[in-house]
Length: 228
Ligand SMILES: [Zn+2]
Image (cartoon, rainbow, N blue to C red):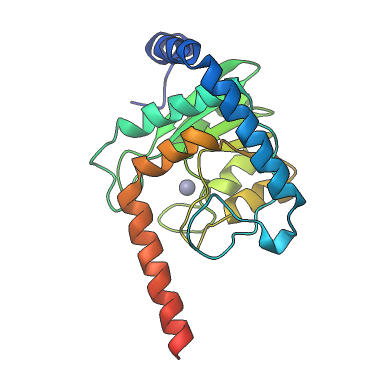
């Protein structure tokens, strides 16, 4: 059902509240944008190994160089969050994720992860976009997965669909991904960006339980590795 959103439906159901919210948040948005630019500059000036991902209390994630994000990017990320929330309470043990694909200022695909065992958000969005994904920007509230699980990696699906730019809401704390999804895209020539700021915090709080579980499992693994 979610695979066939028309740009019209999408605009009427999502763009209007988003735009109102954006107007109310203009000063904060500018401040947030500046804070994000500062953070990016810091990250770029740090030696590669020392670059931190998105503030998790875990080992430094080695991320590719990230591109700039705009207010427009933030609006699309808010749509991803709204889409992700439509599956609230249904995705366990997986996270809630939303994806939007935008080509020349038009939404050409949207999707969300409906439940464990079902395709990921990116897959639905790419299906809806079809050939229009060529040269488009993909927004995803969580870094695209990079491993073969029950589904093939979304990072490769984005590359295969000729997406030219990927904007993520947060880096995936799952050690099987942790920057790997971004690297796969970057290495294939895509521009990769992280939304940063308050929206990143929103993406994290959306999947608080998932993140805590993944980080706890990771800490346990590390403790085991350290004691053996
Ligand atoms: Zn995936």
